Amino acid sequence: MDVLNNVFLAAMVTIVGAQVFFRYVLNSPIGWSEEVGRATLVWITFFGSFAAFSDDKHMRISLLYNKFSESRKRLVRIYGNIAVMVLNIFVVVYGFKFAFSFTSFRSAYLEIPMSLIYSILPVSAILWTVSIAINTYVILYGSWNRKEKV
Image 1 (spheres, rainbow, N blue to C red):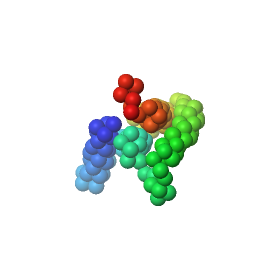
Image 2: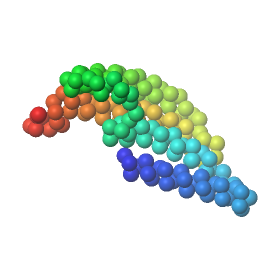
Image 3: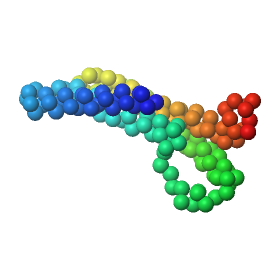
Image 4: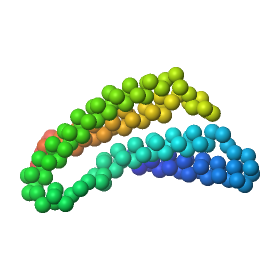
C-alpha cells in the first residue's frame, strides 16, 4: 500500500506543480490538472488511512488502554475490531450506493465518471474490513497460520 500511496502522492505533486508553473509562469493553465489533483488527494487519504491501520500506526487514544492487563487489552482490541467491522459494513453498503448514484455524472474536463472517483469509499472499507478480520484472527489464534498457534 505504501508504494501505491507514494505513486499517487508523486503524481499529485507533479500535476499540481505543473499546474502552478503553467498558470503563473506560462500564463496558460492546464484544465484537467485540478480534477486529477483532487481525485488523487481523495484516493491518497483513503489508501493512507488503510495503510496506517495495516501497519498498526493509526491514531488511537492509549492513555487508558496502556494501563490494562494483557488479557484486557486483547478483549478491548477484539471488541474494537468487531465494532469497526460493523461500521465498515455500513460504509461498504452505503458507499456503493453513494458511488453508483454518481454514475451518470462526469467530471467537467476529463469526463471521468464521478462514480469511479467516489468508489474509493467502499473499496477502502472492504480493504479495512479484510485487514481487521485478519487482525482479529491473529489476536484470537496467535498467528495467521494455525499450525504456528501460540
